[in-house]
Length: 358
Image (cartoon, rainbow, N blue to C red; front, top):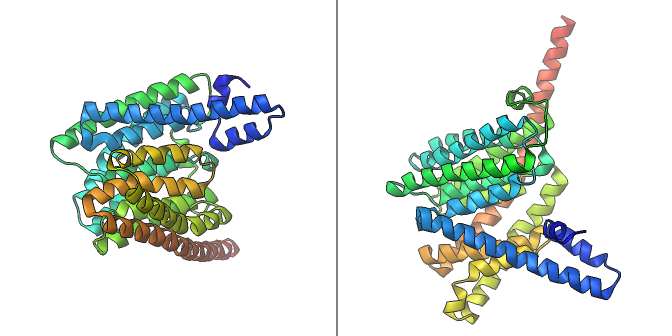
């Protein structure tokens, strides 16, 4: 495996590659490359978001995060349709990210719920032709981040421009990496293949409705940072029950662990070093191959920002409550939704049988 190929490996892949080394010298070499990759990725992410902040304002640094996540996923995966149509989809996705979060912040919780459901459903249909690729996670996460870090006035104009630039960057990266691939499917197939009771389409509805209702409940209780509830819900509402149970058992506990570690570091680290806690969390995520520890380190940056807004104690409580509620609610919602969906499907099938007999 070449040096470049080793840099392309995921954390799991890199660790497996290191374990497979027979020679101690080769193992040390692979460990060195792995460490280089982690810090290279963190440095690139930091530089990319910083440039976005300088160009479009600190209020829109979150757009830099969203574009960066999109670039990282689009360089590897496709939409399963014609590449020209795929580029059109990228611009549609960014249009949703530009309009949906802002619109949801301008209305009451119930209309906002409707906006969330429509936008998340659209993102699912447009981006998630292959469930295994998990494209939708990137774009729904981006939607929720933009909803949580809302702006208005001149800052919103800059946000629109920054998202347009992001769409152009993503399209260029996508075309470069996928220009030699060909597909017989086109844009219309994304909608033709939507069937209410198919496993994939049913999951689309379950995920969109689960996230939207979770955020609605948080909004009705006037909870700050309802995007955290939505992100927790998105994280655990997976298409397969076994995978979902794995995450539900870890989302809350490891967020609590992340809050505890954050609190310890808050009291131990000098303030000049603690200001880099988000970067430290990014490095931790880079070294984490599993969902649990990624969850721990993802708390650092989010808590640092929230602590500046609400105070440390309130930020910790909000983080824990949002993630525990979001994961447990989504688990219960998934169970109820599956039962209702199965019952409706059974009734419709019985009616069809009776109609055929008549």
